[in-house]
Amino acid sequence: MASSPKISALLLAIIAWFGIILQLSITAENYLNVFSYFTILSNVLVAVSLTCYTLIPDTKLGRYFSSISVQSAIALYIFIVGLVYNLVLRGIWEPKGWQLVADDLLHVITPVLYMLYWLAFMPKGRLIWKDGIVWAYFPLAYLIYSLVRGHLMGWYPYPFLNVTKLGYQKVFINSGLMVIAFVVIGLLLITFNKFLGKKA
Figure (cartoon, one colour):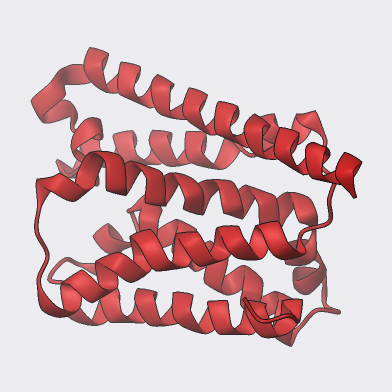
């Protein structure tokens, strides 16, 4: 990562935007479906937050996205994106060509670079335990949205949310496990941040 946080943020924002735009340019799905993937939403959060931080830092939006809690929440979301895709979803299909490039940008490169950015530049020892619960609100809302929209449209963004194939009981179990994973990993991020704060 570049030594300056703003230079690093700008470079990472460009990479994130490129991955999103590339995916939109090559997808055969309608855009509403594309923006129903947690992957896309998390990458958009990375791109928007870093763009606001670098280009409009003194605005209300810039200050909001500059806060350690918000940037750490985004770190949690994009980390989960990389983790779930590479451990669970990567073997389901084999993208080729530009789709492979887009997939790696969205699920590997941006998540890894953002976590490195978070480690390098986030203030240490500033997170509180309550943050770990608050951060779970967005993925919980996403799960509710996905299940309601899936019921209405007959389309689910991920196999583990597909009520048609798995049934509600299995999907609710999967959803509960996902929410627990967000909370646990979020608390681990807070613990790590506090540990670094004590060492500093």
